[in-house]
Image (cartoon, rainbow over all chains, first blue to last red; front, top):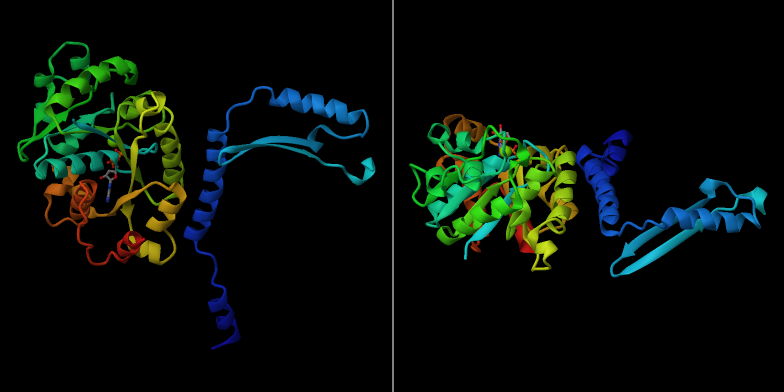
Amino acid sequence: MSILKYFYTLRPPKKTAAVAKERLQIIVAHERNLRDSPVIEYLPMLQQELLEVVRKYIAIQDEDIKINIEKDGECEILELNITLSDENQ
Amino acid sequence: MAKIIVVTSGKGGVGKTTTSAAFATGLALRGYQTVVIDFDVGLRNLDLVMGCERRVVYDFINVINGEGNLNQALIKDKRVENLFILPASQTRDKDALSLKGVLKVLETLRKRFEFIVCDSPAGIEHGAIMAMYFADEAIVVTNPEVSSVRDSDRIIGMLSSKTRRAVQNLPAIKEHLLVTRYAPKRVTSGDMLSVEDVQEILAIPFLGVIPESKSVLQASNSGIPVTLDKKSDAGQAYLDVVARFLGEEPPVREKKGFLTRLFKN
Ligand SMILES: Nc1ncnc2c1ncn2[C@@H]1O[C@H](COP(=O)(O)OP(=O)(O)O)[C@@H](O)[C@H]1O
Ligand SMILES: [Mg+2]
C-alpha cells in the first residue's frame, strides 16, 4: 500500500451526506430554539439601558454587548456577554 | 371513533399525495372504512392519482357551502371496497376553507368512517393549517434531502402549536416519520442522508421508508394507487407502513438492513 493510499483510508474525504447531516443538526437546533423561546419584547430595551450603564464606567461599542435568552429543558437562562477589548482595560 | 390522519411535509413534491392515496388504499384493503380528502384547494390532484378525475361533480368546498351534500361529493373507489375520495375544489382560492367549515364536514365523516386521511397542500400557511388542525395523528413525509428535512421540522413545530390538540391542551398529535424517495445505493455511497440520520435530526417516531421507484410514476400515469400494484417495491413498502401503523410488525424485507437496525433499538 502506498503512503498516500494509507492516509486516504485513515481519513477518507467527508461525504456530502455527512456534511448535510451536520448542517441540518445545527440549523434545526437553532430554529427549534427560536421557536421554543418566548418572544421577549423588552430585550432590545434592556440591552440599550445596560449599554448606557456600562458606558458610564467603560468605553464599549454597541456590538460589544450581547444578550440572549436560551431554554435548557425547563429552565430559562438569560445570558449577558460584555466583551472588553484590551483598550478598555 | 374515527381517526383523522394528516399527511404533511411543508415542502412540495416530496410525496404527500402519493402517500395519501397509497396509505388510504392500504387501510381500505385491510377492511377499514376509509376516506381520503384533498385539501389542496386550487391545485386538485388526488383525483388524478386515484384515477377518479372524470367522476368529480361536487367538491369539498361545495359541501362546506351547502351547494351539494356530502353523499354527492364523495366518490366511491371502483376497485377497493370501503374507499372514498373527497376532491378539492379546483376553482376557488385556498382561503375558501374555514375551520368551521372543515369541522362540519369532518364531524359528519367521523360518523361513517374509521379513518379520515387528509392530503395537505405544501407550505406552512392557511391550507396546510386547515389540513392539520383537527388531526389525531400526522404522517410527516420527508425526503432524505436538506430542504425537505428542514421544512419537516417546521411542520413538526406547527403540529405542536397550531392545531386543535395544541390550542386546547389535549394530548398531542401522534407523529410518524415517513421517509420517501429513498435510494439505498446513494446512501451507501455517502451522497444521501440515511433514514437513521433523518430520524436522528427530526426526532419523531419512525413509521417507514419508501424507496425511489419507477413504479410510482407509472402508477400515477395510470391513476392507480401504487399499493394496488403487487409488483411495485414502493407499493409493498406502503403496505408495510399500513401494517406498522395498525400496530403490526411486518416482516423485514430483503435489502433493508437499515430497517432491521432501526427496529432493534
Ligand atoms: N417513492 C417515489 N419514487 C419515485 N417517485 C416518487 C415517489 N414518491 C413520489 N414520487 C413522485 O414525486 C412527484 C411528487 O409527488 P406528490 O405525491 O405529488 O408530492 P406532493 O403531494 O408532496 O407535492 C410525483 O411526480 C410523484 O410521482
Ligand atoms: Mg400534493
